[in-house]
Length: 299
Image (tube, rainbow, N blue to C red; front, side):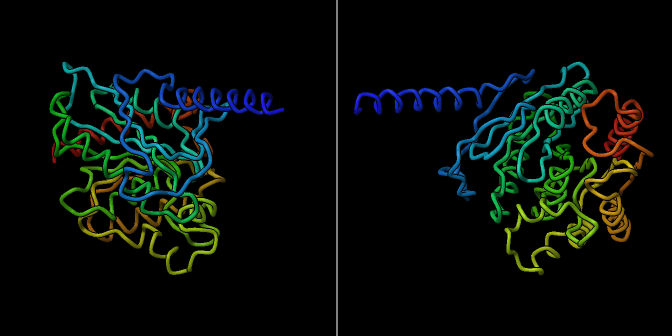
C-alpha cells in the first residue's frame, strides 16, 4: 500500500511540474518572455493557493506568477511608441491568446513595441495586485525600451473588458509622473453601478462582501482628473456583457476634465471581438486606432 501511495505521489509531482513548465512556455510569437515575480517576491500577494492552469481556450486561471511577453517592432518601422497590453477575463482569468498575443501582433505591425502581461488576478479582494503588475510592466518597458527604439515618454497602456478596467485603473491610480502616455480601451468595464456593469468583475476585484463605497471608489468615471492620459475607447453598441453606457460615462468624465479623448461605437459585434478577423469592423477599428496613435504622438 505504501508503495502504491509513493507511485501516486510521484505521478502527481511529475504532472504538476509538467503543468508549471507549460505555463511558462506558452506557444506564441513573442520575441522574449520575462518571468517577473510571484506572490512571494512581489510587493503584495493575491493569496492564491490553487495551481495555475490554462483552459482549452488558452486562458490563464489562478495566476500567481507575473510574466511579460515582448513583441518588438521592426526597428526600421518603429514609431517610438510602446504599449503594455492587459487582456480581459473578468478578473477571473487572463484571456491571453486573442486579447493579448493577437493584439500585440497588430501593434507590432504598425511599428509599436508591445508588452503583454500575464498579471496576477485579484482573487476576490486583492485589488492592489493586478495594479502593481501593470505598473511594473510600464516601468520595464520604459527602462529597457531604448534598445527597441521605444521612447520612455511614449509608453502607453491597452486593455480589453476587465483588462480595460485595469488599464483605466492604472491610468488614474498611478502617480502623475509614472502614468501611461496614452490609454487604449476596448469595451472596458468602467463603472460599478448596478445594471451598467459586469458584476463579477467588481466582485472579484473588491471581494464578495465589499463595502458599497469601494465600488464607487473603483468606478473609474469617478477617478478621472486633468492628468488622466489621452484615451480612445472602442466598443460595440450591442454588447450584452459590458453595457456601452460604461464607456460613455468614462468618455463624458474625460471630456469634463479636458482630457484628449475619442470614442468609436460600432453597430454590432457584441463583446470580446479583439483578435477576431471575422469581426465586421476589424479593418475599421485598426485603421482608427492607428490614426489616433499617430495624432496623439504629434501633440
